[in-house]
Image 1 (cartoon, rainbow, N blue to C red):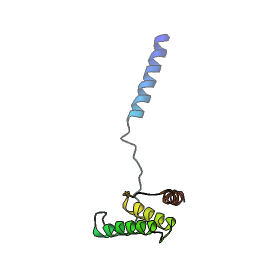
Image 2 (cartoon, rainbow, N blue to C red; image 1 turned 45 degrees about the vertical axis):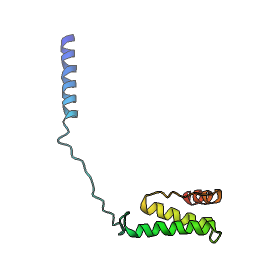
Image 3 (cartoon, rainbow, N blue to C red; image 1 turned 180 degrees about the vertical axis):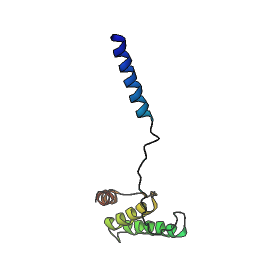
Image 4 (tube, one colour; image 1 turned 90 degrees about the vertical axis):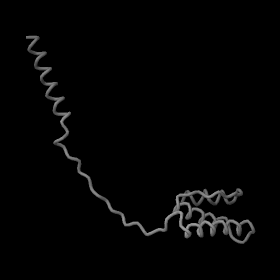
Length: 105
């Protein structure tokens, strides 16, 4: 009787393992998602060079006291979000605080 129980258990395990390992009958249902992204100039194009130059000119105007730190922070964040590149700019505490506020919006 004991040999029969062991045989039944092993046969059940063999059938269960065979079914779980056979994934060829299963299909993966996927959906193709198309997002119409706006046309943007390549990151290395002259348009982005002009955008970087505009941001750096805004930083220079901020240092001269002509515009606010929040205005410069908005320009910097927009540039970074669009180009996915960081700017190497020396910042004081008020500009850093403006960037933190802008980032946490």
